[in-house]
Length: 303
Image 1 (tube, rainbow, N blue to C red):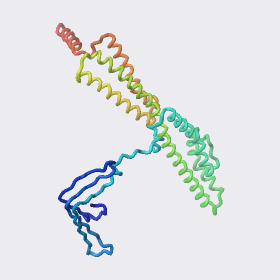
Image 2: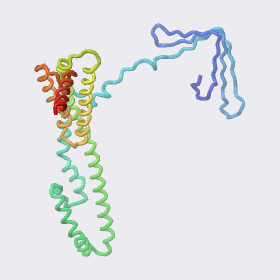
Image 3: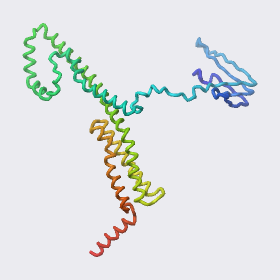
Image 4: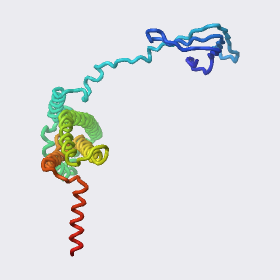
């Protein structure tokens, strides 16, 4: 018994024993017979002399509570806001909320920096590249002319105050940018999950449209060529799906392009295979390739 964390301070030995459970399966009983139980108690005063108890028993039942091993149903409220559990309507609501937040970001940043920069312009970011070039060209002249009108006794105070305001504005903007980055990731996640509700369903139909004509074209049963070709198409579809989702998540492409890329690329192949099956094509027939090779070889022999 290691419940005290002091090593083997409680040891039970018996010649016979059996394990039984109660009818309600709530407890497990170790029924031991003809044995000894040893217990060692460490003195709290720190002395080296420890008390030891030895007990003999004819029959002893050790009961274990099994309630901790019982399957506990997880509270559903913990996952109700997870994007995987949302339906299309809920995802659309979250996407609209994210759009509204993004539209308020300029006003939010302006509200943060306006107490520190009295000449801040809400629309300054629209002309940012030109303004940066203009400010750099006159920065030195502006600094010298501004400091010349500040009394020497207040110059250090003015510079310290300006530096403090600049740091405060920078910190507030950095916090806002970090918040925007997190919300942008959530926004992309919601849009990806919204499209996934439709792409997965359509993928089942698409793979059926590819697999059905393949069976008619290959004309072979078992686990040979049909299985290899089917797995090949599935692997290609899976790789393109993952690639498209990663591109959409990073913002490299629009969400709908990334999520529907695999379907759009395999859909023409599905129609081609259906057309080949209708025309009784032999494109996957080994004999068909052998006949073509024989004709090509015959042409080279004649030449």
